[in-house]
Amino acid sequence: MIIPGDPQPRLSRAAAGRLSLYLRRLELLERNGTVQVSSLALGDALCIPDTQVRKDLAAMGNRLGHPGVGYDVPELITAIRSRMGIDREWRAALVGVGNLARALLRYDGFSSRGFRVVCLFDSDPAKVGKTVEGLSIHSLAQTKPVIRSMNAELGIIAVPGSSAQMVADVLIDAGVKGILNFAPGLIRVPLGVNVVNVDLTIQLEQLAFMVHVGD
Amino acid sequence: MIIPGDPQPRLSRAAAGRLSLYLRRLELLERNGTVQVSSLALGDALCIPDTQVRKDLAAMGNRLGHPGVGYDVPELITAIRSRMGIDREWRAALVGVGNLARALLRYDGFSSRGFRVVCLFDSDPAKVGKTVEGLSIHSLAQTKPVIRSMNAELGIIAVPGSSAQMVADVLIDAGVKGILNFAPGLIRVPLGVNVVNVDLTIQLEQLAFMVHVGD
DNA sequence: TCGTGTGAAGTGTTTCACAGCA
DNA sequence: TGCTGTGAAACACTTCACACGA
Image 1 (spheres, chains in turn brown, red, purple, cyan):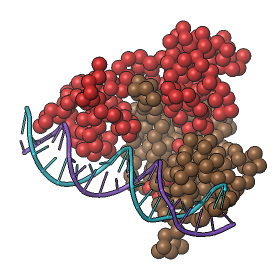
Image 2: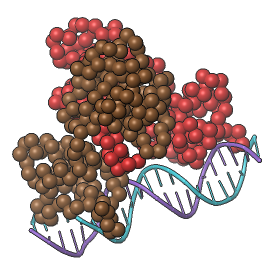
Image 3: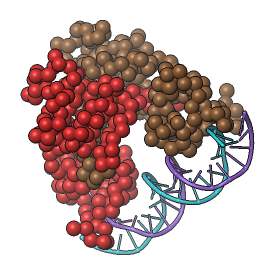
């Protein structure tokens, strides 16, 4: 129940992006046995000013900082996870079983942080039926029943750009609520579905631009 | 020679990010034989308002738009490429020859847009000497001579997080001026070296957050 | 009339300055 | 004294309104 005096202020997009960074750092601190951290210490490692860290953490609502002391590491980790919605498992369907998919499947970062790829799809009949990393590959025609039975809420698109929109449409029709898109070019989605684009060419172009103009 | 009345206003980071998008769209238009485009038509396809498009294009300096007509497609493509520094070939060294590297090497988007991976490195002795996509894999000890002889200006880090900083140091020592980093966690670089981080876990967490809070 | 370029207004984000608590 | 939380100021970015050119 939300009371009029909103206890959860809007978290800006920019701030949300930094919460992931804080979380990583905090988890490292926790593994090292650190139980308290100041905004200055937390920010320093990430090149983020202490005032920014405090603004971000204050924006999460509950009063998390202890004046004169700092923040309690485990408490902060729990709070961030909860606020970001990553205090639970997220199940994802992966479409396009090429090298990128294989890299993603073996990438520790996903599984260790609650993201589980639970089904694979590929349009190539030669791949359908084969098994990769313990998951069998389904045909695209199977998306709806498989995604529903596996309860996948997220979709990962790792196909060439030309078929990305078609794949997105199929995933959305199957009930996926968020898409991580590695194909170049934007994909159109209805309201209520979220997309994060990871466009490698654009990243490289940005890098070239930065080097070109010089820092 | 730069004249005091600066003909090249600063291009904001945000604007630079959109230039890549415009360029993609313009190249598609050019392939379709379109020679003129308005800010409205260009923006519509990318969900960017026409005023934003005009601001971005005006920020490039030269007067590129023709009032009442629009922009000349080939002219605009040339101008954007030149301004972003991607009107030439960029040579890159790739470190860490796993599945991600294989995916990158086969990815059309790079080679077709002037980015060429010219040498491979891996710390695994079993991989050194082997050939992938026509490139032989060198040991990390070889970075300096190989990168210099191949004139690579960019480095791509596709190794696990734990060795990312070490690899970055080696690349920078070899003269690389920009780094595309796929390893999780920030890497420290001296002034004059640019980094673009592609952190897949953070992207997925952002997606989960967006779905969690609901659009 | 159509469509660009641009000052001005509006919005969002970051930094500053400092009050207040342990 | 050390550190948080926060209003105010500064800055960055986007949108608006409109003058002007073809």
